[in-house]
Image 1: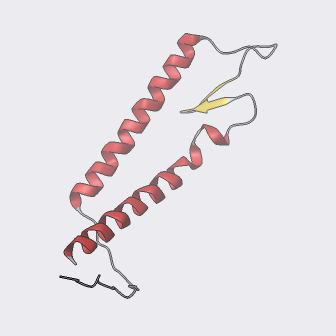
Image 2: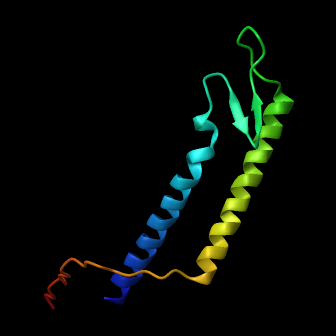
Length: 101
């Protein structure tokens, strides 16, 4: 029974974290127009002729994204270390397996 409570708590925490991630994605690169990459107030457009941006610029963008992800993870870690208050409003019936022994 204690194992089920632990599992439910962990699943609830995961669901909350996924919700935070989904809400945080609203300002990500997926919102940029076609052919543009937006990040931290910068808009990079590929060169004329449909070419790619330089490898150095791509690496800089990747580093900025990694730093942003690290900050988000640190915020989530701080949130988790403070603890979460979870209120269960509806619980399905619990059926224990029958002992044959």
